[in-house]
Length: 182
Image (cartoon, rainbow, N blue to C red; front, side, top):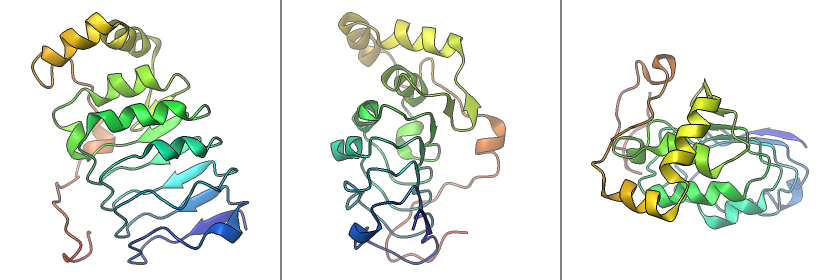
């Protein structure tokens, strides 16, 4: 089994995938997942879709999925900007969709992702340009710049998602007991 679609199944925990170690594409979108776990053994996994869940953090262990190229984790509950640095240990990551998370509202997540993920080619459906790479190095390149950046007002120089990616999206404050999202 290489492709597995478990979207729209009210799944709350990622588990029992040990025998599916050859998976390349795993779709867990539109569930009730809070934690990214139980994926460490999926060494061939290239595409992971966790859109529209309740994921609160990106763990350091995500780096064990060394073949991951596409990560879709939009419309979750990610709020800690430090989680972005955990993606830098993914050597093949080229495409990330992360819009619609609380951390995207008051943090320059785009520049941080471009800086930390050197192989990134697309962010929230937008091509990562050489200009973005240069700006991310200027913003996050040295300890002095990072310190000065942390003292600047929230949202200064903020990366914006393309209109097509963010248009028509409603903000949802999900809870495990609330109904399904539309």
